[in-house]
Length: 107
Image 1 (spheres, one colour):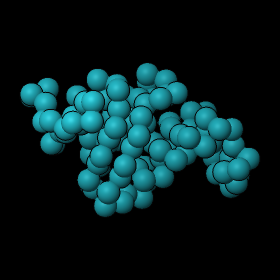
Image 2: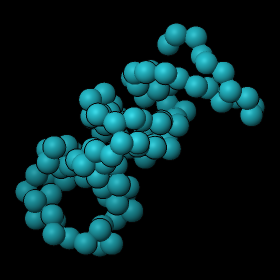
Image 3: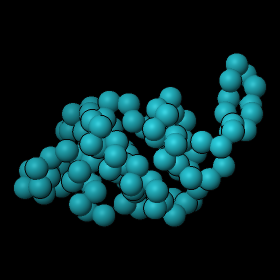
Image 4: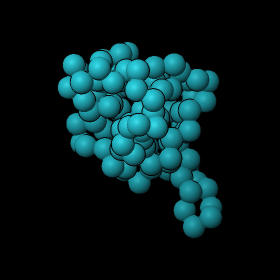
């Protein structure tokens, strides 16, 4: 998983390794956002809640995240307007629309 962390932080490998001891507060807001995404992928938790995880990520980084989430061992709850991201998630789906829930047709 360290390779995934390097991709999520979008640093060249040498720069990423040089920053491994850097306090999170010294990183840019974008780097902290990517670090927040990387943490549960490196150390999985039983339930991972993601609210618009693809926002402000490059298309390449979104693809990397989709691949990582496809193998995620815990339960995922993903809230996203990104149709491609939603379609890449396996399992049950629940759609919220105008305050009502429904199970969407097969994706």
